[in-house]
Amino acid sequence: MQDMFVDLLKLPDAAPLYQKLAGEGVVIRRALAPDKKLVCDFVRETFGECAVGEAEASFARKPVSLFIATDRDQLVGFACYEATAPDFFGPTAVLESQRGRGVGKALLLRSLEAMRDELGYVYGIIGGVGPISFYEKCVGATLIPGSDPGIYRDFITPKQKEREND
Figure 1 (cartoon, one colour):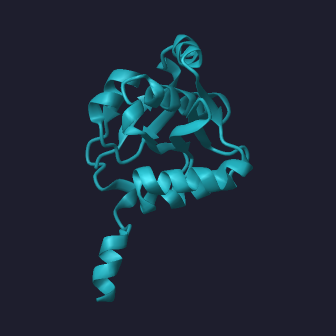
Figure 2 (cartoon, rainbow, N blue to C red):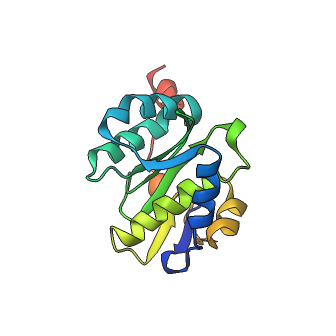
């Protein structure tokens, strides 16, 4: 999976999206330390074991570099940044039942805003993207040529580890 480049100085205004979601009962907020177990369990269930390490790394940062989306007190999505490497966004996931409402876009924008406003980055990297068209449409991200496999090139997945132990 390739990485994508995004110009953080050209992010769209997210205020209308945040207001729309708030009106629907969806809150986008930075995760707090007491959220860690709930969030890590959610990440494991919705995105898999590999992403849990990145979520845990996000909780080790000050401030926590992970945003969550809740819909009337139910966790429906998350987004990490600065988890595996500096200036990287991801991983992120939204419950399938919540997709199409703008929750994923709001999590993406809030994270990229934090990278720009809190960390001072001008450009960001979206690591190991799945839905390329989503990132192109939401933030004008472009593929980085030759970035596959990128930072995850030496990563051993749990399935690979199982095969090695057989």
